[in-house]
Image (cartoon, rainbow, N blue to C red; front, side, top):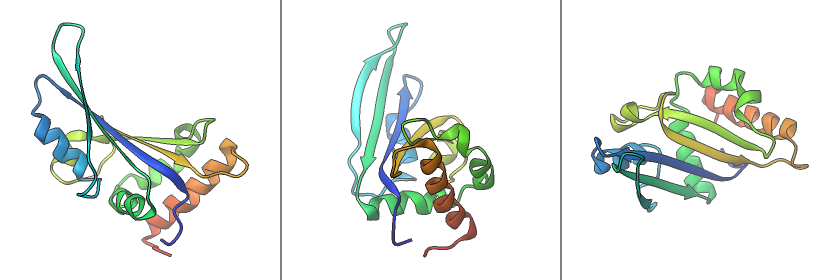
Length: 147
């Protein structure tokens, strides 16, 4: 996949007081290149419990290709393609939620826990163009085509 039609990819996960932060980090690294540093912000929940927000942004083509390669393993990629109109907003951002537990085990599945937000290149910056660009890229992933 020579051209990556995204400006960046953001990944984020919350580690709640009942979770091991290292395991949540491991879940994020299922999608991320190893050399990416995670940002870590500690917060306090409504009941005084600790919540750690872990996030990372990948901006280089190689880093985004790494994330896309992992996303190509999604069994529900066809579902994502069918839902692109709902998954891309008016600001040309594509949203996915991935299963944090599955990611911890090294699997990539839709579900709760990990948020993926990517800014789709679109010129002009219109939702319809962003959906078309995302569809083209994700269709290539679904077909296993790296060109």
